[in-house]
Length: 413
Image 1 (spheres, rainbow, N blue to C red):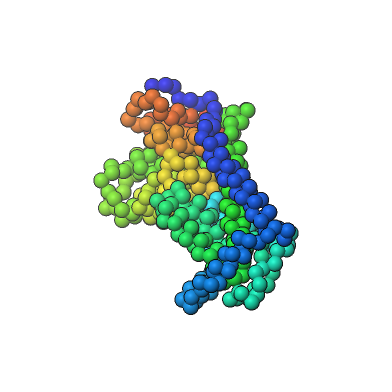
Image 2: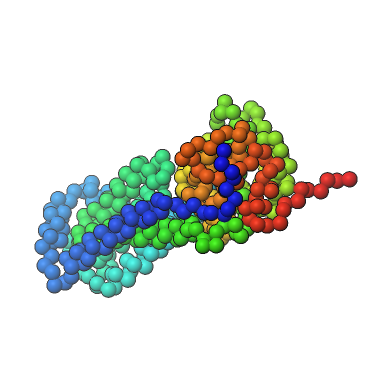
């Protein structure tokens, strides 16, 4: 058994550079495509393709398609998309997914500003009004409906990508954006290149925003030259199963409805000792229990008032050791939508891969709760500290943060 690592070394996430390659490549490719489309949209370029496409569409219109696309294109109005964006942002914030909420807000705002700027820069006229079904004012390139709807749909697909809904979300996003773009050409209010430019710019906006946010996260997770020994601990994340609460795996469903819930020995006393000095949050892979369910279960053993909140895999849409889970946890622990710096947080849990390796890869420090005195496996995560009983946690946190020792609560009488 190796000695507990209290040196303050921080494990950088080795996958961080690889996570930046994909959005960077997508951004570069989409910008190249837009440049090519901008050349085709220039007034000096013959509109052979655009004109042929519009003529073909006009010759094949039907009453049913006209009714459908006239109604469908209304979903791409900025007022409708703004209302949908606000609703989704509120839902994400309520589920403690503030990073995703900020991401959606940024991409939709950037999409609107960029679209309006480019419209006035290119000043491209729309197709002839006599061939259009709707009467629309303004410039044509790039299509605002196509760009904003594709941005909204693609952003939701990115947000859902690390959840089990990734493929349904991606499929619905593609269908929504495709039909919106087709509606603009069918109704005769845009050229084909307007729509294609809107689509590739939506990809560029989402990729650029994702790249910037991932870069900020990677920079914050980078080891400090001074190490982490002097960094005070502000937030302590505590695993649920067999760290804070007993979980033998025999009970399923929402925790609040379990026939029996039991706290690990010494849990209440330790939380009372820690609470005056740290913010305490439960971080659990509870696929059947959201924050309310977990708090309801904790209330049955009088621990709910001793924690400041819960980060649940059901609410996050990702499980430990996934970096998405820990980013959501840091957002939950942060303030005003700004995530807590990873170096100011410690994860306490009994699982080396989930609670130790996952936390350290995300830039947090980790305390391994090892009451069974298990051997450290080769290739397992290296904890910053190891404890055999919860009563040792306050002292371990004190050594990690370099702060004054946590005093036990005074007893009455």
